Amino acid sequence: MSKLLIVGTVAFDAIETPFGKTDKILGGAATYIGLSASHFNIDSAVVSVVGDDFPTKYLDLLKNNNINIEGVEIVEGGKTFFWSGRYHNDLNTRDTLDTQLNVLADFNPVVPESYKDAQFVMLGNLHPLVQLSVLEQVNDPKLVVLDTMNFWMDNSLEDLKKVISKVDVITINDEEARQLSGEHSLVKAARKIEEMGPKYVVIKKGEHGALLFQEDQVFFAPALPLEEVFDPTGAGDTFAGGFIGYLARTGDISFENMKSAIIYGSNLASFCVEKFGTERMQDLSAPQVDERLLAFKKLTQFETQLH
Ligand code: AMP
Image 1 (cartoon, rainbow, N blue to C red):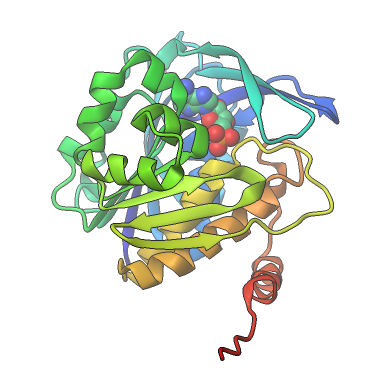
Image 2: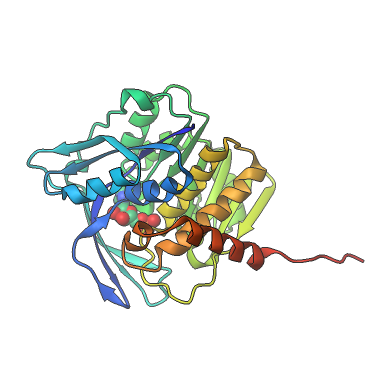
């Protein structure tokens, strides 16, 4: 069985959407990635840090989804990473209201001995130096996927570029791809980002789907048109968790198989947005996932009659 090592935030989030507002709830990139990847029955572990203000029931939730949390450090007297955001009416854009690094500010990640040989590594969104340190502790992974966001481009660009130069796949949203590359066209942006290191570039476009680039090959997957979108928080991480989870499950990292991985990632992300925070991902069943996968197939299949 493939091993998947995930690093990212395990966090408190406070979210505001046009439909409501939450207090501090469970969030964090690694949380969403782990819950999403757990649908592939692989051996996964999270490396992260929380304060002793973090409820045990949240850690139990990860454990109960078969996610190893040996690598989640609990800092005595420390405060957990906190992020707060407000979505605009289109739900596709948001403003970050607050980012409190707290225990993340001086986190030295320790990869558990039994995951140093992980074949798949997901460097979820957090400080690029933490991502780099995790990468230095693993032996010889088959595939490394990096996710990041504008916060780190604004605050630690040079460190971020170092990590980017060492990964196989990068997943970012369209705005971030433009910021990172300085190009408006996403095709040109992807090409420039490939020159920074990654062989594959995935650009997430929220409700407008996701693009996969490798040299001159492009694949596009739409997002499923949903009746209800309640809270997009974590959709990008859920997508990334589904993407790498599927690749880890199949062990095939070809471009062809990455196309399927994009669909599996988009499928899982479509559930994430239906409720606040991680709520929908907590009660998501395998038959529900499979049923929607068929809807995805229907959405994108058509006949061609060439003259
Ligand atoms: P997404 O909606 O997929 O971009 O992910 C949202 C999640 O990312 C939230 O649960 C936040 O806790 C987490 N997050 C927000 N800002 C940061 C940051 N600067 N570094 C790491 N994680 C973050």
